[in-house]
Image (cartoon, rainbow, N blue to C red; front, side, top):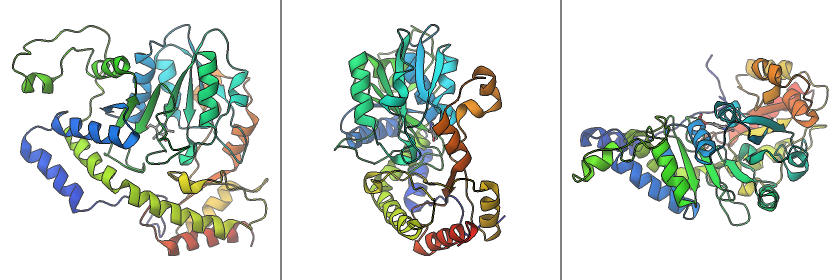
Length: 377
Ligand SMILES: *Cc1c(COP(=O)(O)O)cnc(C)c1O
C-alpha cells in the first residue's frame, strides 16, 4: 500500500550518512567513543543526570528494575494503557505487576488517584508513562512516590525534548528510560538510554548491560593497564553500537527543530478538529509536549474499524496507541478479573492520526478532513 499520508515517516540527511561512515571508517563499531560522546550530550540535554546508552528502550526499563534490585516478592505499579514494553520487564524480574488505570479520557496518564489503591507493603516502584509526550501529573506522582518511599521509574519513550515545570521528563524520579526506536522523536534505529542522578545505579546499569563485567572492551582498548575483568553479578548484553550512537548524536541535534514542527502541526490538527461533536483530544499543553503521536478519542459508539478503513481508502494510515495491557490474550490469563474502565474505554475509542515533523500542513488538513468526513460531517 502506498499511503498518501503514512502514520509516520523517517527523514535522514547527509549528516546521518556522514556520521555512519565516520564510525565505519574508524574501525571501531561496537560501544566506544561515539557512545561516550552521546551519553555526555544526552546528559547535558537532560540537565545533568548520568546517561547509559543501551540497545533498546525495553532494555533500559529492564535494567531500571534490575539495578534497583526488584525481584520476586516485590510489586511494581505500571500503567495498563501503554506499550507492552513498559510492563513485560516487571515479569522478567519475577516481580508482581499491578496495573493502574488512566486518570481520564482527557488525561490518559496514570495519577496518584489511580495508583493509590494498588500500594501495599510489597510495593517497591511506580512506572509512569508520559503518554504521547505529555507529562500531566508527573509532579504529583513524584511527590506521591517520595512520600511513600517508592522508586519512581519514568517511561520517557514518548518524551524526548519536552519540558514540564522547567524540567525534562526522565529526571523527575529515580530513573528515566528512553527509547530511540525508528518511529520515536529521535532514533538510532533501535536503541535506548537510562538516565539517573544516582551514580551507583548508573555504574550498576553499565555493568549489567555488559554481562556484569567490571571492564568493557572499550575500557581495555583504551587503557592498557586493564588486562582482565571480573564478573561480579548477573548481567545481560544490552550494549548498543557506536553506529547507533553516531546516528543518535545527529538526531539529538535535530530534535529541537523537529519537535517545534510537531507542535505547529498539532496546533493545526487541534484547530481543525476542535468542533467535531463528541471527539476528545487528550491533554491541553501541546506546546510543551514532545507530541510523539497525535491521539484522539473517537465519539462514543463510533465504529473505529470502519473509520480506520474509510481513512485508509483515502490513503491515510492510522493506528491505535494502545490496546490496554490486561486485554491481550497472554495478560488476560494473568488478570482474569481486572477491570480498568478508563483504559478499556481508551482501548475501544483511541485513534492515532499521522504525525511526523516533515508532514506539512496540507497532509494535516487531508487527515483532519478525512476524519471529519468518516465521522459523518
Ligand atoms: C517504544 C516504547 C518503549 C520501548 O522501546 P524499544 O526501544 O522499542 O524497546 C517502551 N515504552 C513505550 C511506551 C514505548 O512507546
